[in-house]
Image (cartoon, rainbow, N blue to C red):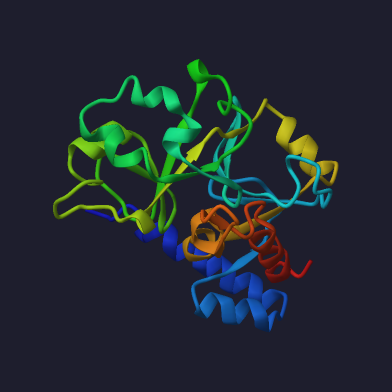
Length: 247
């Protein structure tokens, strides 16, 4: 059986090497060797990154790096990787404790969750919780890019002890939770790209993981004694991505 990521891993890394050689870009060549690469793209594809051009810190979309989960005729969806309020899933979604299912929510409720986007973020009835994993689970995840997998059934994952205990345990570093997502109607995203709102990029799974809120933000102790992120707005991940893209 061919693994979930074997063929795609080869062609995406191969394309990155071609881009580096075509552009005679030594920095990109080095990043490809380190498996932490990113380069510009012409067309939207599943697993692409949208890098915000907007630098207005008052805008919701300023400094965001979005991972595209789906791009099709019916529309597009993605997850903001680098934005958090340093809230646990339970604080984001207090209603989950009312409808907890055994150890399912107990296992996830205290995990810090990122802000994936404005859709499904606020209204409890329409709240969306999305999880990304760096570890594939057969029947429970689908690959976005090699090394990054979307959890398609959080409850099943927990019931199979993949989050709790056992041989398939996912550590906190391997599972990232997001509340809300970013969505576009058919043709809307391309119109925004054409208007110059977004820079489009391909990136390796390792680079995408580095962009995630829980991996890029150092923390400090605030005056109340609580540990809080220094860069909750995600500026560093955004700046690093732009730098690698030569922007």
